[in-house]
Length: 451
Image (cartoon, rainbow, N blue to C red; front, top):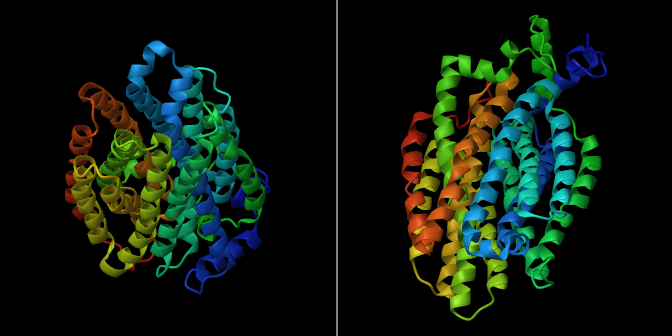
């Protein structure tokens, strides 16, 4: 039998009372518990954003440094493969992290994932070949993937029904802030020499370690504690290492209603993920190419495009949360998909003038990357507490098993056709699928979280 110190189910009446008090406070004003949970989830997503965009900004320079000269003409293909490998690791880590968070708690899983991230991003800076770099990217992806579903569940379970979607938008903005800071850092580091990319990955190590120390004070989700106690009261043991028949993921897939919701939401997640990883990750490279053709600095414009794009994304993240409380989850998501569909060809096939491209990049970032907020806003409201981290993590991460092929395919198309426009426009058509499927999910605006 697990000891009271390691198993929350046997932690006694004091923890149960704390959990019930936390649940009741969800209807009260915003307090320290809510702010701490939001700050921790936002910070975790910030690190993910910094690490991810560091890869996007530096991958061409990494490959020029690590690949043999005979392979330099295939850089888009290797870049797509590197991003695909990262996404594949992200998918595995995300699925595993969500399931584990439903057994060990949201707070503990956040600490574990950020600590692993800090170690892995440091190892990436030591890469000596493309193969070693790819391996480190895969392992880093495992750590990155496990943070989102855990943080999303923690925020949803500690904020009230009236403020939950807004908090989710602020949480999701951590990714855009991380992207922006990475772009800013690369703006200054890119001119320091061919090994500048290594320092980008070193930068992410120390702040993450500091965060691990700070997060020891973050409270556990009261709803999760209460759900564990209820399971114990019903005689349902939630082992930290359960038998396969007891896995929360199997419970999600066995329930007809949850299975339907999960299938529909997974298609929508695939649209968002393929749309961004298969298209928008090429924005810095595309803009740097346009700048070079006009006599500008490719590296400077690459970082500047990243900052411009992600400034728009931050507005889009937060704006989606507020808009979802005004017009509902369904119509807000529809609007973001529709505008992404329209803005993608406008960016990649539109004017080649850098002054005209700038506002297009901002609006493109608002909707192609900002649309990710539909998931932390809508998904937690579709799953019961004891299965929430598993459900939202599955939807968010399972799409990456397919989406990892997007950068790989886009890189091949760009290499063969010698340009970004056709590849981006072709991949942009996937937003039509999201427009159709968002009408099949139940509207949850103003409704309490299912217990």
